[in-house]
Structures are given as structure tokens and as C-alpha cells.
Image (cartoon, rainbow, N blue to C red; front, side):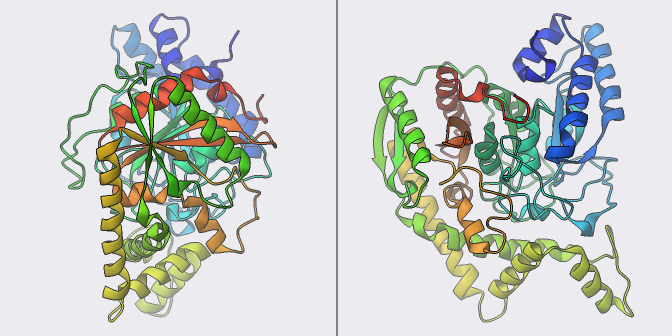
Length: 487
């Protein structure tokens, strides 16, 4: 018999609706999986086993009474940067240790309304600043495919929890690749929605013009089901857009004939791991064989994306993180006066990478430098967005690798921030342009580590992005392969 933790969300919903399994059984199986593998993986900051079983029982009772909901009884876990009422939310930082929100983030509230069972909060790079989850204020998460390697970041706990089958799906956030990179490194489906598609209310902000919550799961269809529930205008977030949300699952036809697929030449960078390029080229050939048309497109300002991103994101972080001063919430280190209290609290509460980015951003925003740095970066961002807009006038989706390499070893890049920043080189453009993207598995390298295929859709074009990704996924078996730890 298939283990309950091997089910997809779609399969689990079908089995619960027929009474073959209960949500309590499904949830208990995932809690057992967490107990078995969490000591090695370290994906969770908080496990909420007791309340999860209560939620599962409530889901079973609702179903027994003839009720239903889109995710009724499905065990999910939430990145610790999203507020959860009554459950500690630290953003992976010691400065917020002990902070328990009084409300849910809108996307969490919508998942609760849809019937999810929350099994816990997931580890992450502190305040979502990082590409490997080595910047967590608590501990490093390990990749279930190889425990000596990183799971990606900043939503590393989100990727690892799905790969280790400790939840049927998870929520992450993506500021410059923080959902898609863990998706690629951990061999799972991972979606960065268009900016404004999902409410950011209740998200502990890093870069407000870039951050976007999104789902990770075993299959494209599962991520579509989660996004369906999360998406849509929220009166609590002025940046969420009043754009109609199509039926994503209904659009998964498996047909890509006639689809115009852009291949951005700038994304096949020098120094790319050969197996990554080969796997992505093989995927492109598959699309062509199915009747899709491959079109060479150019995103000429891509070479400036990394520089623009690290000025804009750090500037916004400098402003957003000013609120963490030890006065209103979180940890506090008392000094002789209020200024010393600020200094001690922030000095001891923030990790090195967060301090580095706050200083970068504060410098870029300072008098005399604002126009030269932040203002110029915003102009470059406008050019990058124009590149994407022009490309999408010619094509329906664009396809590229998610990362130039597979998962690197823990500690490999920690002494060289620039090398770490380069991990996001193929993902940050989508955040600057506000478009949507998904990473799906498309192969393994010589070490057996997963390779990610990145499919971009235009702003609010998640339906066509899902269609292309689902068709490819269903024609291959990469998404069914299990991480070494649990296989």
C-alpha cells in the first residue's frame, strides 16, 4: 500500500472524500514523518502536532456532516515569515524570538478557511535574506537529497519539508528566487506568483516591492490548488490587485501544441553546470516535439539585474527592519538609555547577513547617494521590466534553468557573499519585473541531485505557466523521484 505521506494533495482529497482515509490518519502520518526525519533535516522551527490533530478531527467532522472545502484536511506547513495567530513567528531571527502574532497573514487565513491542517512553521534564512538557509538565526536546514548540501533559500525549510514528505505542501515567500531556488534544489514544484496576485498582509516584509508568498508541493496541480485559494484582492493590502483569478486546475489540459515558448539567451550563462544546461535543453526539445514553437528572445538588461536587485531590496530592508528595536515586540537587550537599548538589541538580535544588507540599504538611501544608487537602480528596474514586457509580446511563456548549478555543499559559499548572491542570478529578474514563475524538476546531475526547470509567465499569466509546467511534468517522472533520505 502507498504510504499516506506519498500521496499528492489531489489524491489525498479524493481518498478523504470517499472515506478511504481520514484527515486524522493523514495528519498523524505526516507528524510521524516529521518525528522520524526532522532531527536530520531540521526544516521546522515549530511543530504544532497537537493543534494539527485537533484541526484534522474538525475537518473529518465537517466532512462527515456533508461539508467540504478546497483543502479540507490537508496537512500543510508555513514559512516562519508569515504571521500565524497564536503560534510563534520569528522570521528565522533571534530578534523576534518569543513573538506570537495576534492575527493570521491573509494567505494563511485563506488556507485555514479552505480547510488546511497546519503542522508547523518552517525554518528560513533570517528575514528571508539568503539563498541557502545557512543564515537562519537558529540552525541550518539540510537537503533531504544529500544532508551535506543546502536546500536553497530563503524558503529552505519549505522546500526540504516537501522533499522529505513531512507536509503535502508548504508556503514560502519569493523576493529574488526564495521559493524557486529551494524548489530546484529539493526537486519539488515551487511557484512565485505575479506581484500583486497574493496578499502580503501579515508577511514580515523584507523588500516590499518584491516579496510575494507562494506554494511548494509535490506536483504542479497541487501548487495550483494552493494558489487558487490564496490568490485574489485583499482590502488589507493596497498592492494586491483586483484581477480575476482563473480556475487554474481546469486549465491543466496537458496540451502545449501551438504554445510560443521564449528561450532567453542571457539565461544560459557561462559557467553553468553542464548537466543543468543539458537537462533544460532536453526539456525544450520535448516542448518542441509536442508542437510548441521555440522562439529566441532577448532580455538585454539581465546583466544589471543582480546589481539593481541588491540595491532596491537592501534599501527596502533598511526601512522595513527599522521597526525591530526591542521596544514593541520580540527580544530586548536593555542599555543605559534608549539609544543604547536600540544598539544592543539590534546588534545582538540580527545576524551578520541581515546587518550587511541593512548597512548596504542605509548607505544607498543616505543623503547625497539616494539618486546615484536607489534612484538609478529603479531606472534599471524599469528597463528590465520593459525587456520582459517586450518578450511576452512575442511569446506565451519563457523557459530557462532555475539555477546555474544544483545544490551546493553547506559552508561552501558562506565566506563569499558575492558567490552566494550569484545563486539567484536566474531568478531575480522575475521579481524586478513582477511576472510569475515556477520551478519544476527536469533531471538529476551526476551526483543524483535534482535540476530545476524555470517557466515564466507574464504578469497574472499563472494559468498559461501552470499549463506548460503541468504538461511537461506529466510527461516525465522526475517529480515522482524521492529524495535519498526517504527513498
